Length: 113
Length: 114
Image (cartoon, rainbow over all chains, first blue to last red; front, side, top):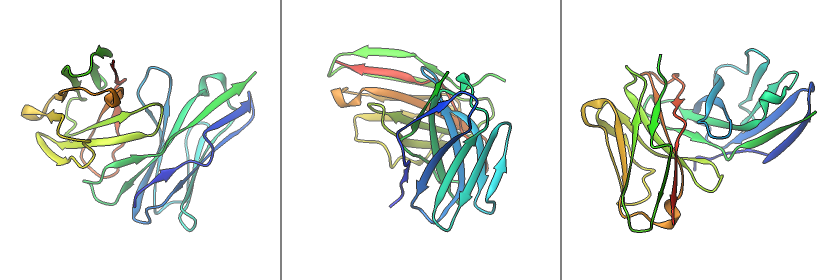
C-alpha cells in the first residue's frame, strides 16, 4: 500500500552544522515529492519539491535528493539556524492530478546552541 | 495574497456535541483538501474537493464527518456527534490545478473533545 515513513522521529543538530532528514517511501508510482516544515501552532509550510524525473534540486540553504532505486528522499539544510527548529514532513503524490498528497509521520529538528 | 484561513483556531467541545470547522482557501484555488493530525502522528488525508465536487473522500473516517464546499469557495467540515478520538488538529489546504502544484496550508483548527 501507500506509505511514506521517516527513519528518525527526532534529530538534534549543532547550530551552524548541516542537517540531513531522511524519508523512505513505498509507492513506486509516486511522481512528485514535497518537503514541508511545521512550526508550533502553524500549518505545514512548503519548503521544496522535486519531481521523479530529477534526483536533486536546490533551494535557498536546502537541497532535496531523490533516489528512486531505493525509494529514498532526503532534505539537507545547510548552516542550520535556530529558526529551522520545527517538525519536517516529507510527502508524496501520485502521477494523476487527482492523486492526494500522503504525509509521513515527521521528524522533529532541534538546534543546539 | 491572503493565505488559507481556518476558523476557529481552537474548539473544545463535549463528547456528543457538534462542531463545524470552516476553511477559506486561497482565491482561485480549485483544489481544497482536509487533513488531520491526531496525537502528534502523521498528517492524514481526509478528503479532496475540486471546486464544489468531492474528488476523493477515501480518508473520511466515518459518517459522523460531513464536508461541504457549496459554490466551490469556502468549505466546512462538520463532526456530529463528536467522539473523544476525533481530537486533533484539522488542516485545510488549497492548490491550483495541476499535478505539480504544492499545497498551501492554513494554521489548522485544534479540536479537543472531552
